Amino acid sequence: MNLLSFNDLQNKLGGRSRSSVYRDIETGRLPKPIKFGARLYWKEADIDAAIDAQAA
Image (cartoon, rainbow, N blue to C red; front, top):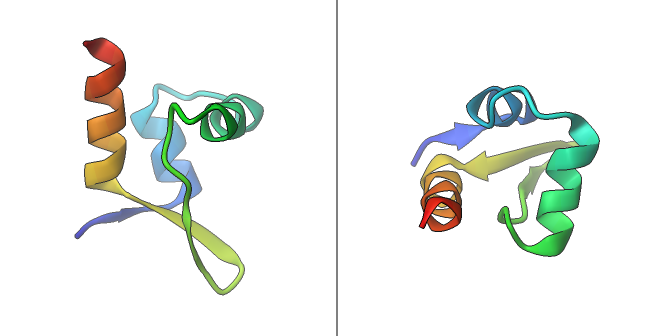
């Protein structure tokens, strides 16, 4: 399982802004993050699945 930091997630989504990423999370277009301490991470497989679902 590969985890993405917020910066990794932004890069994978083409440099989207912080507010756009969090808006997509609130609307359900992106999965919610996993919290480790004070940091947030996303499963890369879940992000890939969300991107594929949007493309379909």
